[in-house]
Figure (spheres, rainbow, N blue to C red):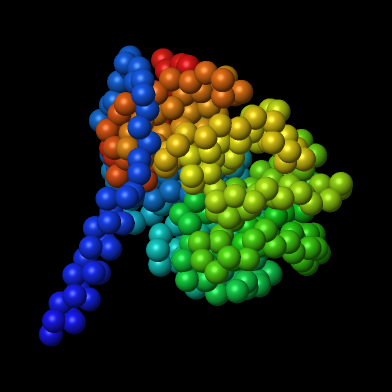
Length: 332
C-alpha cells in the first residue's frame, strides 16, 4: 500500500511539474489597440479556403459571401463554377445561380474543386476521384492509406494547367490528368504516422508549394526542395513564402526555400497567421497579436482575449471565439 502511495504521489508531482514548467510568450511592451473586437458567432468548422460559423455564416479568405448554411452543412470551396458545401453523412451540394445540385458519397466530403463539369473530390476515408456532373456518376476513384487523425486545415484540389493536384490525408499529393483520368505522378511530402495531411497547396511563381504539419516542399522543373519544420501556418505574398513554426519562429523563404529572414518570438504558439498588405500578423493563443514588417526588424504587440477554439482570417479580419479583429488599423 505504501509503495502504491509513493507511486501515485510521484505521478502527481511529475504531472504538476510538467504543468508548471510550460512556458508562454511574454512580450515586454504591449501597444494599445484602436481596433475593436466585434461580436460574432464562433467557428464550428474550417479548412484552408473557408470557415463555417455556428450561426450558419460562411467566411472565405476574401470575405463573407451571402450564404447561410443549415442542417449541419459546412463550407468546402468556392470557384467560378459554384459553391461546394457538405455535411458529415456524405451529402454535398453545389450552389450556383440560386440552383442546387445534390450528390451522395459513401463517406463525408472533406475537400473538393469543381473544374468544368467535373468535381475532383477527397473523402474522409482518404478516397479520392472524379465525379462527372453531367453524367451524375463517379468516373474515377482511388484510395490512399487509411488515416486515424487529421489536421483541420484540409486543403482543396488545385488545377495546374491541364492537370489537377489532389492533396491526400497521408502526407501525399496525387497528380491527375483530367482528360485521360489517370494518375500522372504521386509525391510524398512527409511520412509521419499522424496529423500528416496536406495543409497547404499553392502555385507560387514556377513552383508548387506543398506542406504538411511536419514539412514544406517546393516542386518545379528544377527538382524538389525541402524545408523541415513543425509547421503552424504557411502564407505567401508575391515574392516570398512565410512559414510559421510551432515553436514561435517565423521564416521568410524564397522560391528555392532558402531562408531570407527569420525571427523567433520565444514561447509563442500561433493560433493563426497571415500576410496582410505590408504586414506579417501572428496571433498567439494567449491573445497577443504580433504585427511585424516583412523583414522582422520592427514589430508591435497588441493584446486581445485568449484564443479558445478555431480561428480564421477573412478579408483583413481575424475571427475567433465569436470575436473579430480588424487588421486595418494595426501596424508595426
